[in-house]
Amino acid sequence: MVLARPMSCHKDLACWQGGVNVAGSSSVSHYPECTQHDMCGHGELKEVTEAAKARVPETRNALRKRGVEISQNVKDGDIIAVEVDDVNEPWMLGRVVIKDRREGPRTAAEHKPESENWMGKIERGDPVIDVVKLEPICPGSRSFQYPDKTRLKKEAYDQKHFAVFVEDVRLVGIELVHKPKYKPDSRPRRLSGIEDEFVGQYDYWELQTEDREEILQYMPKYDGK
Image (cartoon, helix red, strand yellow):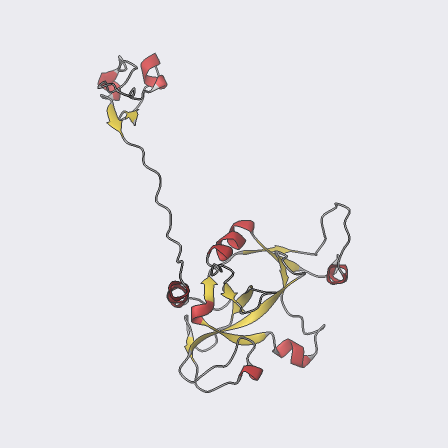
Protein backbone atom coordinates (compact mmCIF):
# COMPACT_ATOMS: atom_id res chain seq x y z
CA MET A 1 0.00 0.00 0.00
CA VAL A 2 1.24 3.48 -0.83
CA LEU A 3 0.03 6.99 -0.12
CA ALA A 4 -1.02 8.84 -3.25
CA ARG A 5 -2.08 12.43 -3.81
CA PRO A 6 -3.78 14.11 -6.79
CA MET A 7 -0.56 16.09 -7.24
CA SER A 8 2.60 16.91 -5.30
CA CYS A 9 4.04 20.33 -4.60
CA HIS A 10 7.38 18.91 -3.36
CA LYS A 11 7.73 21.95 -1.10
CA ASP A 12 7.00 20.11 2.10
CA LEU A 13 9.01 17.27 3.65
CA ALA A 14 5.91 15.12 4.06
CA CYS A 15 5.01 15.66 0.41
CA TRP A 16 8.21 14.53 -1.25
CA GLN A 17 8.79 11.73 1.27
CA GLY A 18 5.44 10.20 0.43
CA GLY A 19 4.09 7.62 2.81
CA VAL A 20 3.22 4.00 3.41
CA ASN A 21 0.99 2.45 5.99
CA VAL A 22 2.72 0.69 8.84
CA ALA A 23 1.86 -2.98 9.37
CA GLY A 24 -0.71 -3.34 12.10
CA SER A 25 -1.51 0.35 12.06
CA SER A 26 -4.84 1.89 11.19
CA SER A 27 -3.10 5.10 10.14
CA VAL A 28 -3.00 5.94 6.46
CA SER A 29 0.63 6.98 6.68
CA HIS A 30 3.39 7.22 9.20
CA TYR A 31 4.29 10.54 7.56
CA PRO A 32 2.03 13.55 8.26
CA GLU A 33 0.02 15.06 5.45
CA CYS A 34 1.61 17.79 3.39
CA THR A 35 0.98 21.23 4.88
CA GLN A 36 0.15 22.41 1.36
CA HIS A 37 -2.81 20.02 1.15
CA ASP A 38 -4.99 22.80 -0.28
CA MET A 39 -2.79 22.48 -3.37
CA CYS A 40 -1.89 18.82 -3.23
CA GLY A 41 -5.13 17.39 -1.94
CA HIS A 42 -5.49 14.81 0.79
CA GLY A 43 -3.60 11.56 0.58
CA GLU A 44 -5.37 8.32 -0.25
CA LEU A 45 -4.12 4.82 0.41
CA LYS A 46 -3.71 2.89 -2.85
CA GLU A 47 -2.98 -0.78 -3.34
CA VAL A 48 -0.19 -1.53 -5.82
CA THR A 49 -0.83 -4.66 -7.87
CA GLU A 50 1.50 -6.50 -10.21
CA ALA A 51 0.94 -5.71 -13.87
CA ALA A 52 -1.00 -8.38 -15.69
CA LYS A 53 1.17 -10.62 -17.87
CA ALA A 54 0.12 -11.90 -21.26
CA ARG A 55 -1.03 -15.48 -21.06
CA VAL A 56 1.17 -17.70 -23.18
CA PRO A 57 -0.62 -20.64 -24.86
CA GLU A 58 0.65 -23.86 -23.33
CA THR A 59 -0.94 -26.55 -25.47
CA ARG A 60 -0.28 -27.50 -29.07
CA ASN A 61 -3.89 -26.71 -30.04
CA ALA A 62 -3.70 -23.29 -28.40
CA LEU A 63 -0.50 -22.47 -30.31
CA ARG A 64 -2.06 -23.56 -33.59
CA LYS A 65 -5.19 -21.50 -32.93
CA ARG A 66 -3.08 -18.45 -32.13
CA GLY A 67 -1.11 -18.97 -35.35
CA VAL A 68 -4.33 -18.89 -37.38
CA GLU A 69 -5.47 -15.70 -35.62
CA ILE A 70 -2.27 -13.68 -36.00
CA SER A 71 -1.89 -14.67 -39.66
CA GLN A 72 -5.08 -13.00 -40.85
CA ASN A 73 -3.60 -9.55 -41.46
CA VAL A 74 -0.08 -10.30 -42.73
CA LYS A 75 0.97 -8.15 -45.67
CA ASP A 76 3.47 -8.45 -48.49
CA GLY A 77 6.98 -7.96 -47.14
CA ASP A 78 6.14 -8.77 -43.51
CA ILE A 79 8.67 -10.89 -41.64
CA ILE A 80 7.14 -13.81 -39.75
CA ALA A 81 8.46 -16.62 -37.57
CA VAL A 82 7.24 -20.13 -38.34
CA GLU A 83 7.61 -23.34 -36.36
CA VAL A 84 9.49 -26.07 -38.24
CA ASP A 85 9.35 -29.80 -37.50
CA ASP A 86 13.11 -30.12 -37.32
CA VAL A 87 15.24 -30.61 -34.21
CA ASN A 88 18.13 -28.77 -35.88
CA GLU A 89 15.98 -25.84 -36.98
CA PRO A 90 12.87 -25.62 -34.76
CA TRP A 91 11.78 -22.28 -36.27
CA MET A 92 12.52 -20.15 -39.30
CA LEU A 93 12.03 -16.59 -40.55
CA GLY A 94 10.21 -15.89 -43.79
CA ARG A 95 9.32 -12.77 -45.77
CA VAL A 96 5.66 -12.82 -46.80
CA VAL A 97 4.94 -12.73 -50.55
CA ILE A 98 1.46 -11.53 -51.59
CA LYS A 99 0.70 -10.63 -55.20
CA ASP A 100 -3.02 -11.09 -55.82
CA ARG A 101 -4.62 -9.65 -52.67
CA ARG A 102 -4.10 -7.01 -50.02
CA GLU A 103 -3.41 -9.13 -46.96
CA GLY A 104 -3.91 -12.43 -45.18
CA PRO A 105 -3.39 -16.07 -46.17
CA ARG A 106 -4.50 -17.58 -49.45
CA THR A 107 -6.56 -20.72 -49.95
CA ALA A 108 -4.59 -23.42 -51.73
CA ALA A 109 -6.19 -24.17 -55.10
CA GLU A 110 -4.57 -27.55 -55.66
CA HIS A 111 -2.73 -30.43 -54.08
CA LYS A 112 1.03 -30.06 -53.80
CA PRO A 113 3.16 -33.00 -52.63
CA GLU A 114 5.77 -32.68 -49.91
CA SER A 115 8.52 -33.01 -52.48
CA GLU A 116 7.40 -29.70 -54.01
CA ASN A 117 6.89 -27.72 -50.81
CA TRP A 118 9.56 -27.47 -48.11
CA MET A 119 7.04 -27.20 -45.26
CA GLY A 120 5.10 -30.29 -46.26
CA LYS A 121 2.19 -31.55 -48.31
CA ILE A 122 -0.55 -29.05 -49.15
CA GLU A 123 -4.13 -30.06 -49.82
CA ARG A 124 -6.71 -28.09 -51.76
CA GLY A 125 -8.45 -25.64 -49.44
CA ASP A 126 -5.58 -25.31 -46.94
CA PRO A 127 -5.01 -21.72 -45.74
CA VAL A 128 -1.34 -20.96 -46.41
CA ILE A 129 1.08 -18.03 -46.67
CA ASP A 130 3.75 -17.82 -49.35
CA VAL A 131 7.18 -16.84 -48.04
CA VAL A 132 10.82 -16.48 -48.97
CA LYS A 133 12.93 -18.27 -46.37
CA LEU A 134 15.73 -16.30 -44.72
CA GLU A 135 18.78 -18.38 -43.90
CA PRO A 136 20.74 -17.97 -40.65
CA ILE A 137 24.41 -17.31 -41.22
CA CYS A 138 25.20 -20.24 -38.92
CA PRO A 139 23.05 -22.49 -36.67
CA GLY A 140 21.56 -20.54 -33.77
CA SER A 141 22.62 -17.17 -35.18
CA ARG A 142 20.45 -14.05 -35.01
CA SER A 143 21.93 -12.92 -38.33
CA PHE A 144 20.04 -13.85 -41.50
CA GLN A 145 20.38 -13.49 -45.27
CA TYR A 146 17.93 -13.50 -48.14
CA PRO A 147 18.56 -16.07 -50.88
CA ASP A 148 20.81 -14.67 -53.61
CA LYS A 149 20.19 -15.64 -57.22
CA THR A 150 23.81 -14.92 -58.08
CA ARG A 151 25.12 -17.46 -55.57
CA LEU A 152 22.53 -20.23 -55.81
CA LYS A 153 21.54 -22.58 -58.59
CA LYS A 154 17.99 -22.03 -59.86
CA GLU A 155 16.66 -25.17 -58.18
CA ALA A 156 18.19 -24.22 -54.82
CA TYR A 157 16.91 -20.64 -55.16
CA ASP A 158 13.38 -21.80 -56.00
CA GLN A 159 13.35 -24.08 -52.96
CA LYS A 160 13.63 -21.00 -50.72
CA HIS A 161 10.17 -19.94 -51.94
CA PHE A 162 7.33 -22.03 -50.53
CA ALA A 163 4.06 -21.95 -48.60
CA VAL A 164 3.72 -22.25 -44.82
CA PHE A 165 0.65 -23.28 -42.88
CA VAL A 166 -1.05 -20.54 -40.87
CA GLU A 167 -1.26 -22.73 -37.76
CA ASP A 168 2.54 -22.93 -37.69
CA VAL A 169 3.03 -19.14 -37.53
CA ARG A 170 4.40 -18.06 -34.14
CA LEU A 171 5.15 -14.35 -34.54
CA VAL A 172 4.32 -11.65 -37.10
CA GLY A 173 5.49 -8.11 -37.73
CA ILE A 174 9.14 -8.77 -36.90
CA GLU A 175 11.49 -5.84 -37.51
CA LEU A 176 14.95 -6.86 -38.69
CA VAL A 177 17.95 -4.55 -38.50
CA HIS A 178 19.86 -4.26 -41.76
CA LYS A 179 23.63 -4.65 -41.49
CA PRO A 180 25.67 -3.61 -44.55
CA LYS A 181 28.26 -6.36 -44.23
CA TYR A 182 28.53 -9.37 -41.96
CA LYS A 183 31.48 -9.13 -39.60
CA PRO A 184 31.93 -11.31 -36.51
CA ASP A 185 32.70 -9.67 -33.18
CA SER A 186 36.32 -8.85 -32.44
CA ARG A 187 36.80 -11.46 -29.75
CA PRO A 188 39.29 -14.17 -30.80
CA ARG A 189 37.38 -17.29 -31.69
CA ARG A 190 37.35 -20.01 -34.29
CA LEU A 191 34.98 -19.28 -37.16
CA SER A 192 32.97 -21.99 -38.79
CA GLY A 193 33.31 -22.56 -42.50
CA ILE A 194 29.89 -20.98 -43.00
CA GLU A 195 30.95 -17.83 -41.13
CA ASP A 196 34.23 -17.64 -43.02
CA GLU A 197 32.27 -17.51 -46.26
CA PHE A 198 30.23 -14.49 -45.16
CA VAL A 199 32.84 -12.36 -43.35
CA GLY A 200 32.86 -8.83 -44.78
CA GLN A 201 31.28 -9.90 -48.08
CA TYR A 202 27.49 -9.83 -47.90
CA ASP A 203 24.69 -7.81 -46.34
CA TYR A 204 22.68 -9.44 -43.61
CA TRP A 205 19.70 -8.74 -41.36
CA GLU A 206 19.74 -9.12 -37.59
CA LEU A 207 16.92 -10.42 -35.40
CA GLN A 208 16.61 -8.44 -32.19
CA THR A 209 17.08 -10.30 -28.90
CA GLU A 210 13.59 -9.47 -27.61
CA ASP A 211 11.97 -10.82 -30.79
CA ARG A 212 13.97 -14.03 -30.55
CA GLU A 213 12.86 -14.46 -26.93
CA GLU A 214 9.24 -13.93 -27.94
CA ILE A 215 9.52 -16.52 -30.69
CA LEU A 216 10.89 -19.05 -28.20
CA GLN A 217 8.09 -18.16 -25.80
CA TYR A 218 5.54 -19.33 -28.36
CA MET A 219 7.30 -22.54 -29.26
CA PRO A 220 5.86 -25.79 -27.89
CA LYS A 221 7.29 -26.99 -24.59
CA TYR A 222 8.49 -30.58 -24.70
CA ASP A 223 8.70 -32.66 -21.54
CA GLY A 224 11.11 -35.20 -23.01
CA LYS A 225 8.51 -37.99 -23.17
